Image (cartoon, rainbow, N blue to C red; front, top):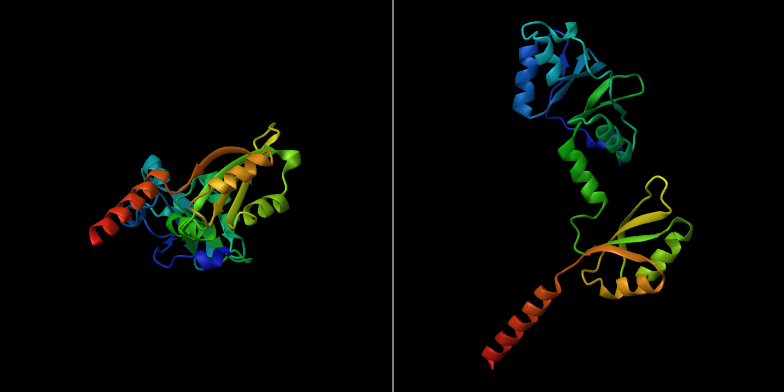
Length: 220
């Protein structure tokens, strides 16, 4: 998934002739903290709410204002991970998208970005989440897949992180099974540390079994 496919058509860009008051009103209407400035097709930069308020130039055209962000953008061909990195590093509420000629193509909202990331990560799919830890030297995607699949489960998504100066790698797995007990036991046998897990509550399963037994009893 690239940036071009994440563009939202709902939020219009500002023109250099628009006043600070117009910009603030648009930000309030669309509940954002920044807006892109476009001159014809060219992307000029991103103006923030604080730029306008600090300079106190509500009746002046925004083309006369200094910007706190100098052309933060992603290219239309950039992958969603690059978009996420740009938004996180600059703490943006929206991300402008341009083509190779710096022509403005549109913006990506955080809502659209998070929704697509949730889809890619299978967050909304049923299943359990397992957080593991293993020595960096022992990390093997092949072994992890084999352990999961040998317990009749499938990996829906997988992420790894390694903190600086740490010898341990943290692994987050989203699996298609809600009962993770067998998978966790297998990982522990192979020397993995179980940091955390999220699955259907054993209490809820027991309660459901008791409820079904009670219903069967009433039907006798």
